[in-house]
Length: 231
Image (cartoon, rainbow, N blue to C red; front, side, top):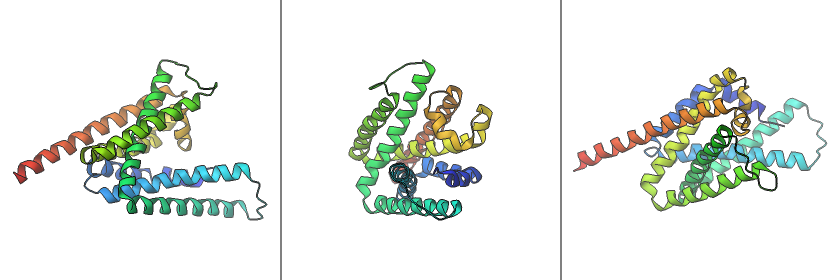
C-alpha cells in the first residue's frame, strides 16, 4: 500500500501547499506555533507511512475488506499519526525547535548530496549500499543543524523555517513541472533521490535556493526595520 490517495490530493491541491510553503518561508518565525504544527503534521504523515509500510511488509493480514476500505483505513491511520505528531510539536516547544532544524538541515544537505553525486557521477557506498550513505548524511547533518537551531534559537529558527518552507515551495512547484522531465507527479520524491534525474534535481535545488535566499533576506530586512522603529 502506497500513499496514492494522499499524493492524489496533494497533486490536485498543490497551489494550497505552495501558499503554505511561502507563508512558512517568509513569515514562519512570526507564526511560529502554526509553522511548527504544519511541520509536525507533515512529519507525522511521513512517519506514519514508514510505520504502515513496515507493518504491511512484515505481517500478512487476512483482510476481508474491499480495496477502497483498506485505503480508507490507511488514510485514517496516517491522519491519526499526523495529528499526534502535531500535538507533540506544539506541546514540546524545544523538541519541536530541534526537530524543525533537524528536518530542514538534514533534507537540505541530503538533496545537495544527491545533486553532487548525480552531477559528478560519484559512487559512494557503505557495504555496497549507496542508500546508507544518504541516510548517514541526513542524520549527521540533521543532528548538527538541529542542535545549532536549538542553541541560537532566534536567528536559527527563522532560517530553519525559511528552509523548510522553501522545500515545501520547491516540492509544490515540481508537481506541475515534473511531467516535463518525464516523471509522474506521484513519483517526485523517489525521482529526486534516485540520482537518475539530474536536471529535475537541479531545478528543485535552484528553486529551493532562490526562495531560501529571498526569505532570509526578507526576514533580516524586517528585523532591521522593527529594531529601527523600536529605537
